[in-house]
Amino acid sequence: MLRQALLGVSRSSTIKNLAVHAPLTRQVVQRFVAGEDAADAVAATGSLAAAGLLTTIDRLGEDTTDRAQADGVAGAYGDLLRLLTEDGLTPKAEVSVKLSALGLLLGPDGPRIARANAERICHAARNAGTTVTLDMEDHTLTDATLDVLRELRRDFPDTGAVLQAYLRRTEADCRDLARAGSRVRLCKGAYAEPPTVAFTDPAEVDRSYVRCMKILVAGQGYPMLATHDPRLVEIGRYLVRDHRRQPDSYEFQMLYGVRSAEQQRLARLGHQVRVYLPYGSDWYGYLVRRLAERPANLTFFARSLVSRS
Image (cartoon, rainbow, N blue to C red):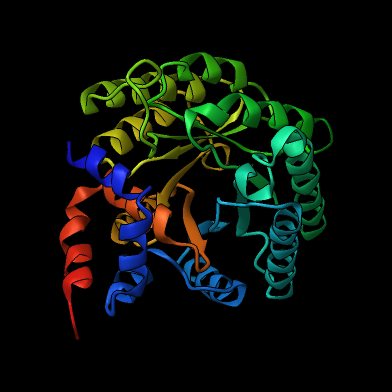
């Protein structure tokens, strides 16, 4: 129930305004968000690379309302990739992109606009020597996102996909995508979804995650196991061992600011670990969904909202 309440809060403009203007909210944001501009993201990427960690960088923002804004997001990713290249960080960093930020929801032409902007980013990433992963959003955009993915992979076959284990359809999607050359990030999912399309019991979500993980690890693609759950991490370690996967044929992924010591422990054990690193001023929806995934963080967040100092 707490998770559902938090996901409801993520859509509240009233609470968003309160959170954005609370004096100490920045302390919470800085724990989970690298900063407001690309230079902040590049600096954080450098620090993580020095600690032996990879990154995937997300420029926050989903509520794109016009073509100019969508094109601007694509341009901002180009600038980010240029800065990463100048600092020699692209071997350690890729970018994650939400199609809604690139114009997917801009009416009948939305898919075409989003695809064109995603192609711009993929070109920039290829020139920089790195890759792009298409983030997954709520279930109403799953088919549209996978359609764009299929089109992008004709020219950019290393474009990554994200699948969410709490969706009932995801096992079938894993079977479809667990093929040679396919990069797939498996996460639990962080949007409010109806029980007709998603598992709502945490134990069911965990079981679905394990089933999906088994399909991806046994397949010929490149699984990216995104979880902070210690049990699922250990099952993932067992599966890659059991299937004799080489260290460069898979990776674990975790969020910036969450279980940082565990990220470094896994890296020391020889696993590739990639940190999902968000930056930007439009952090509210992202942060509240992170709290919904890990409600123990709620106390820290709540203190910042009620503080008057």
